[in-house]
Length: 213
Ligand code: SF4
Ligand code: SF4
Image (cartoon, rainbow, N blue to C red; front, side):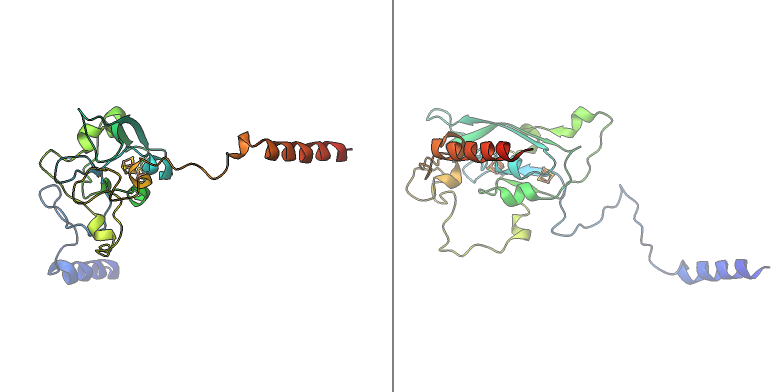
C-alpha cells in the first residue's frame, strides 16, 4: 500500500468522529447572523399606515439602480402612509441588487430593511422584480426588522422623523422635510437659473475661447 493511500485513510479516520460542517439543506437551515442582508421588506406602523413616504431617498442611494418608485399624494379620504405621499409603485429588481443595505441606511422612516429571506431563485427574470405587494408587511403586522440589529436605539428625547404618537404627520411634532412635506424655500435660486452665475460662466468660457491658439 503506498504511503499516499495510508495518509488519505489516516485523514479519513481522523475526521470520522467529527461533526460535519455541511448541513442537509433544505431540510436543515443555518441560523443566520443578525446582520445578514436578504430580501427587502417594507414596514408598517402599528396603526396599519405604511412607513414609506415615497421620498425616493432609497432609490437615490442605490448604487445598482435597483429600486423603482412612483409616489402618489395621500388624501383625506385615502391615507396610505404617515407622510404627504406614499409609494404607489415600489419595485426592487433583485437581479440588480447587490444587497449592500444602502437603501435601508438612507430611509428616514425605517420603512425598508433587508431581512433574512434568501430563498430567491426563479427560472424567469421578471419574477425577480419584486413589487410592493410582495415586499410590504401584511396588514396587522408592524415590525421594524433588521433596523434593530444595525442601530443603537435612539435617545428617548431625540427628534423622531415621523410622529410616534399619531403616526400621522400634522406639522406639529416632527420635521416636515423628513416625511416628505418639506416646502422650505431654497436659499438661492439654483445655479442654472441664476443669471449672474450664468453670466460669469459665459465670461470664463469666452476667455478660454480667446486663449485657444
Ligand atoms: S441593497 Fe443596495 S443594491 Fe440592493 S436595492 Fe438596496 S441600495 Fe440597491
Ligand atoms: S427612503 Fe424609505 S420612505 Fe423614502 S421611498 Fe425609500 S423606503 Fe420609502
